[in-house]
Every structure is written in C-alpha cells, then in structure tokens.
Image 1 (cartoon, rainbow, N blue to C red):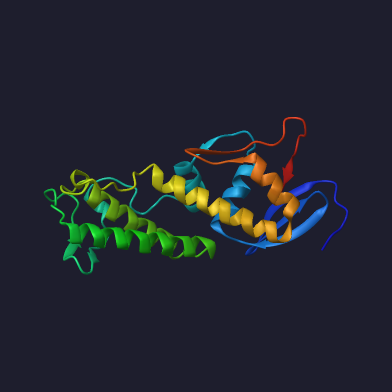
Image 2 (image 1 turned 45 degrees about the vertical axis):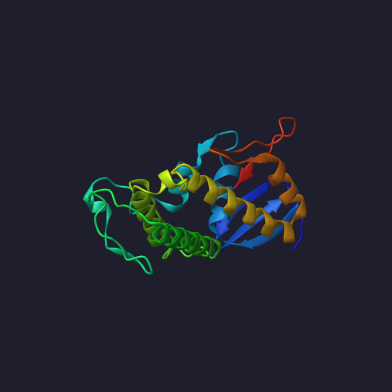
Length: 209
C-alpha cells in the first residue's frame, strides 16, 4: 500500500509494525529486533548499552537478581553428568567431555533464543535467557575451563551479540518490503557495546508513533 504521507511513522499495531518512510507505508511482523529498532528510532542520538536495551524492550532476566534465589530450578545437561542446583557450591572441575557438552548446549540455547526472538515468543524468551545465565555462571566459576584454553562468552558479549543479530535480521526483513528504509537504517543504526540511531546531520528525521 503506497500513499502520500508528509511524516515518518514507526508504531506497533497488534502483532505488526506500521512503518511509513519516504511516503511508503509497510506493515512488518513483530519481532524483538523490530522492538529494538523501534526504541532506537524514537530516541535519536541517545546511545544505550545493549544490556539496557534488552531490559527496556524485554524486561529484566529472571536470573538477574543476587544470591541463591537466582536458581529457580535445577538444570540437567545430559551426557556429561552435569547437574546444576546451587551456584554457591565449591568450584566444579570440568573435563573435556563436560566442556564439549556445555558448549553444545550453549549453542542450542542461543539457537532457540534466536528463534524465540524472531517469532516474538515472549513466553519462551525469559526462560531461555535464565538458562543461558545459569550455564554461564556455572562455567565462569569452574576450574578446568579457561585453564584449558577455552573461553566462554562474557556477560557483556552475550547481550551485545544478541542485540546485533536481532537488529541485523530485522533490517534484512525490512529490506524485502522497503529497501529505501533498510538502506537508511543500515547507514544510521550503530551497534556495538552501545547502540544508537544517528540520522543524517543535514537531514532532520522525526518519527511519530
């Protein structure tokens, strides 16, 4: 649907996003990446850390508190006899098989989280993030992991990677229906340890909702 418009719009309508840019209107399915972009375009030239952006859009992780209450249920990682029930236990010692199993499970969780974010499955996202946090905390305190030349993902890298991937996928979806907007976002969205929407300094762009 194309009409004449004199303003730019980025707003959520049910499970879709209505976007009007350069007098072209499109509706795009909701996703976490679209939510990230929506926040950024409505806060131009305001850098926000990836961790803060995740919490602003999705809310805090259930495992973001402190102390033993962080563990809501035990986690069993099959194949390595790895049963996590209390992060306050003595440092675990990991053998190579356990490390491989943890890596495989980490990759599975990241894939499931990506799928849930693409589908805007708000019921699964918090649980997956919580399990990822538990696995990270276990590995971070384990002997035999880093000393064997293995490196896990740091807490800062995790949201940074998730946010960048979600935004990249959202822009790719936009490109299918609105290439001009995708080009604009590709040039003006900054991702890294912080994210920011930086529109052209010579062309003031205001988004309505």
